[in-house]
Image 1 (cartoon, rainbow, N blue to C red):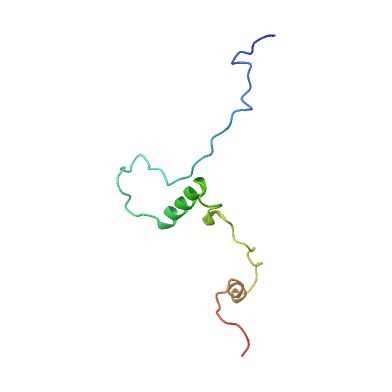
Image 2 (cartoon, one colour):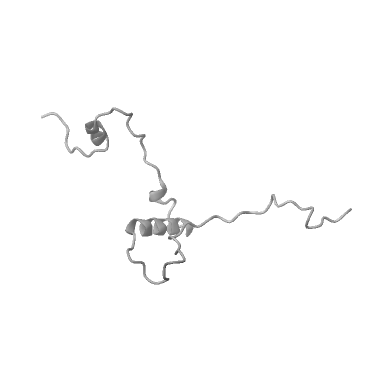
Length: 93
């Protein structure tokens, strides 16, 4: 049998690491200290993803798309608000 040299081998079986989105990375013009403004939504999503990665949660709620499709074009805004439950009590008196 002939031995395969590194040039003959294919890299099809090499696993690619998962890319961790994490928090945003600093640009070269920014200092490494405390950011000027903390984005609470970004921090919350990062914590949710960390909990999933650690096995403490099944999924990150911030990564789940909306359960319903948006209403078709031309639909009155009141229909959209009613569908999302933002009109309050809409029962007849």
